[in-house]
Image (cartoon, rainbow, N blue to C red):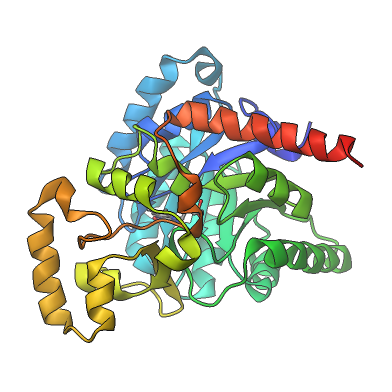
Length: 354
Ligand SMILES: Cc1cc2nc3c(=O)[nH]c(=O)nc-3n(C[C@H](O)[C@H](O)[C@H](O)COP(=O)(O)O)c2cc1C
């Protein structure tokens, strides 16, 4: 049994997780992922306003599933926060973490590295170490600094292909993950500290990508984009359809700050940008349209409902370069099981051909 199955006993190996997509990964999606032997993260994001209601809803759904109902010490779900939101978010989160003891906490995008230390220390204090700490990184330097300062239980190594926000400058998983693995292993051996478990994110859409990540040194995988095509993801049909339609994501998606600028979500630290499917908003900006005019058209597009999304429309469609591999709507539980089982088959096939 590996460490992840020890910490999250309802899960199956290799661990498949759903990333904490703000306002998208809520109790409905995460309970289905956890029910299928994965670990779902509720995306609290930068405020706690809906978190208690989502955790209560998760508790209700937990009772409907025997495997999850048997988990008593922690809530079999994770919660993710965006740390740039500052001290107020931590103060609001701590009593909630203490009361509900989610199995894992996902920390991302601090405006200062000290925030990671404070969140890690305080979470471990109020949950008596029951809530495991996952920290998402995208560079070798961050992996080393955070391993030293926080000793997280899990480092989520996110490569440049990832959908939604990530580092503007960041390698893809194929080179990032083994370099992080080597560097962190050496550091932990030298300092005689426990090595965090590595989990991979960014560009993994199905069993082949998951198997690749496992061979690169990950013990589990996280997906975001793939779960957008589940009925449990809290997104509009127009958004889901735009994800299903997109292909060749290296060309049709891009990471940047344009959609944050237009939507007014400008608190992100400078080094982060959001990756999404390109549409008229992007093309007009590239041709020189002013931010004011683009904003006006964006607001108009919001009134068009589902028709506001698509290649020839304007609304934000955060998704990763793997969009072309997302071809059908499937339940989050089916996605979780499929990716886990296909990864095992791919690894067995590769092994038998040696
Ligand atoms: C629409 C969308 C929203 C996201 N929102 C968040 C978020 O609020 N917090 C966070 O830590 N990660 C967020 N992510 C990143 C995911 O947690 C995950 O790391 C990423 O999606 C993995 O890459 P993939 O999209 O290629 O699977 C988001 C991803 C997407 C696609």
